[in-house]
Each structure stands twice: as C-alpha cells, then as structure tokens.
Length: 221
Image 1 (tube, rainbow, N blue to C red):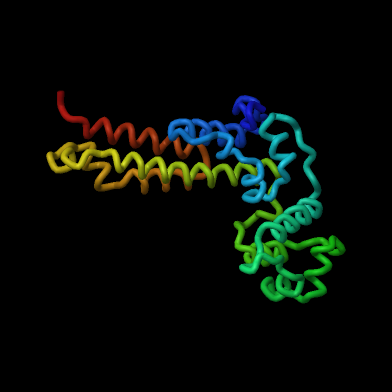
Image 2: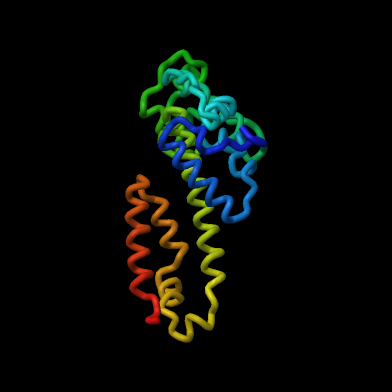
C-alpha cells in the first residue's frame, strides 16, 4: 500500500486486479486523486465489505471469507449504520419488517442472527434499503469488484463528457467525419454501453469495432 492506494499488480484476484488497473488508469488520465477514488470507507459502504478486508484484498493478501450468515449480518449491520432515515436515525426493526414485507419477529430474528436468511429475505431487505441485488450475499472480492466497476462507469461517463466537450464545434460544421461520429453517436453513450458489458473480452470487442470505425472515417491523405 502506497499513500493509501494499492499498486494494481499486488491484487491477487484476477477480476478484481483487472478492474483496479482500469479504474486507476482512467482516474490517472482524468487527474483524479487515487486515494479518493480508492477510499476504503466509501468502497466499504458501496460494497458492504469491511474496510480491513478491502485493504487486504487490494494489498494482494488473502482475506478469510466469512460464511453466508456472517456475511449477511456484517452487511446488514453496515446498511443499518449507513442508510439512515431522513431524520438521521436508524430504521427500527418494525420499519424494516414493514418495508421488507415480513413480521417484526422475522426481522428481529434475522437482525440478531437467530435465523438464517433465505434469498427471499435478502432480496426484500436489499429492495428496502435501495441497494443492488447480491449486496448482502456476494463474496467479498466479487462485491468489491462490483463496487469498483460502478466507480469505473461513473469515471467513464465523466471522461466521455469531457471528451465530447473538447470536440471543436467548427469541425463538425465543416464536415470532419470524426467530429460527425462523435456528434451523431455520442462518446458518453458509447462509453456507458461498453461499461455495462460483462467482461474485458466483450469490451475489447467494442474497442476493436471502434478502431475499425474510426479508421473508416479518417480523411484521405
């Protein structure tokens, strides 16, 4: 760990390492502070993974993977501490029960660890707190990867907006084919759609297609 930011090569989990590398490179291009991009507290709230586990994963160390119920209890506790009511107070067991469509006894047993959660319980609680599917159940490395991919999507949107704003307006009006491509199809839209793809292999295909398209619209020399 260097100044709070992990060197991407240190990350042992392959999908996580690839995501860390992409996010770090993109943030670097945009001049973003990497310590803020990889802020442990922010990533913990976004993923549900404890900060010490995130630090270990980003350092390339092996973190002990908790069982499903332990993971559920850790992340439910985090939700109750960080997703508060408008008045700043925690949701009560009764409010969680009402919002998740279960009895107060069921909610209390789940919160206290006296009952193992079903996928239906997890889905209902995730909907109540407004978090994505799998927040309460995904393995730590997978959850962290997902959170960083959402960071990547936001950076891509910001980067695309910046790129679009730098396209000279006169170029588009004088028939520059590259400017027309950016104007007609939108860098932001392309970047956003590419970020939704499930793997690097799919994103590489988009890059290959764009390279071919850009080559085809280059002006004749």
